Length: 459
Image (tube, rainbow, N blue to C red):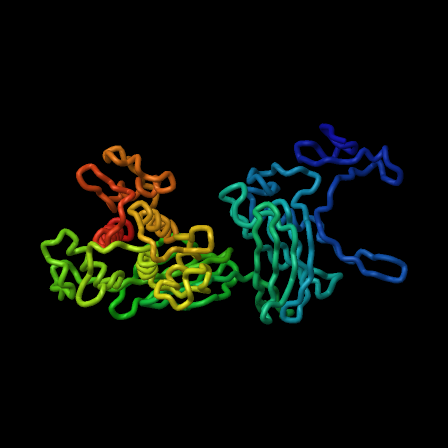
């Protein structure tokens, strides 16, 4: 029942608690207020005559969450409003599992509503004790991060104690690695501490240290150093998929979640005015694309077509453009090839096509074919570059109008947003009020777009 005051007068609705009317049930003491819902975890000893309660966590869950998350205390799993949770279940301990870390036995209890995992040392069940609280939910939004752990499992993966959780509301899965932390108390021993994984990788032309996956204890810091090889410079560094610029170091502070960091590099281009030995007999200094050809040549994005030729008017193919973008990203390794029947492993653009597919930059025609030898229209080239910019975390929010071009209506619907972005950022300029979105891209044109992309977008 619900009323302003409980039958005993000790609990009011302002405290958001729902209670039984004890007079309606046999065996209940009418002098006590009985509330709905369990708010703790209990340990029972199994004996010949039944179960004996040896430990109960009492109000620990409320006290811990109130201490660490006071601004959202008693919130639900789809809201971040303070104390909006029904009084029936509170934090709602949903599941429990047991595991051993460094010879100690621990219980891991999932809290479905406010989220997170509470850890107890239960090596001696009758004297179980609270150890730690892990919560990788992002409270900047109602449903963000890892919300509402429903399933929980403990396993040793490659010898490392790992806690796995399936989060019902966010639809995410967490893997927490656990490390032992030696205590300095008089009794000695150890406690379990959550650790998170930071994965680091670097493209061709440089390195990142430390590389690979590193385990980082909760609330600690980890610094990464990015170094370019001789003849290269840092193009950009991505942290959790967002561009943080061409930084030489980055520190993760107060780590409470898994992270990724990656670095890409580009060949160093000599300053303007420095002499360049032009290797191409068909590119003259008076040509409008001269500086662009120099840029793509010196940066290693495009090479000649043989016999000292650049072939500026030659048409660009899908395979060629994927190779250029792959080089722009530092030519990172790919996990596999052979996704398309017409792109055999070992073909000169096979790795680039696989990379483009992995990063969501380009897909095939939907029939198992990629069409690497097919030519690329301007709107297709711009769309590929737009997706590349999104993948790299560059700003793609600038959009302008195509009204200044008389043939703007020739732009396909799928390419409209990318073309507006390219015009507004100066990547494409058209000629005489003509945009020519369906025109086949030429090598000189792509070289110019890449140079502008480097100057206007990557910076």
